[in-house]
Length: 254
Image (cartoon, rainbow, N blue to C red; front, side):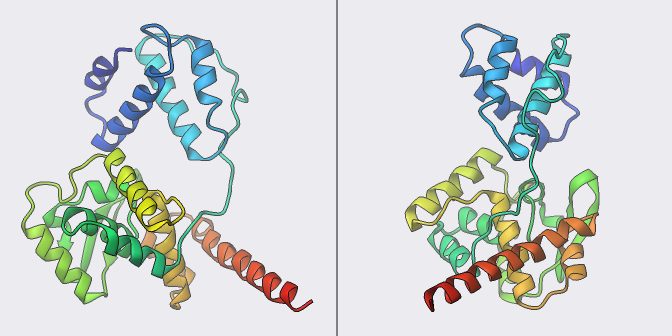
């Protein structure tokens, strides 16, 4: 596969977008027998991803590669199972604290802590620079290149983050998505916690803030959701878990 040629051709894309494409192409390349994937090999590759945004991300990347190679996309729009709406996974605050404490001091611990405390998307974390830090929070560029201000009221964390950022040059967290995913995988194995992704920390922070009394409107602003319905998912998540707890209690009394 002409991965480097593709990345040079689309050099204007954001670094995080190019990295996501690169990861997809490397995975696909390992599963093909020739220099370029056949339609059958692409189909077999995509069928491995049954639900969620992972399928859509890989599909979009390969379609863009086909455009670059001037190949027709012959698959039906219903060929693959679309991303399904589902309630997000999250961990309780004490579990996240355990992951943070297990991480090595310095870059690793600060990356995990910042993802959680600021409720950031991984792409937002990876683009942070020292000039994004303000006296009482962080200014980030989120989806659709929309800028938002994330207030940080935990003064101990804010001071620690500012001190760490002073000793960095350029991006505060310069590693690639794969590195952060592997970091969390390793931490989960060490602490025997169910596997989390970088985005799970964002979900966990959302639930944590709702448990502490933040309104849905406040959470929507904090997370940078354009649609209130996206934030409402967290309230539905808490209702589902409350139902489970009640069922456990009532079931144990029978």
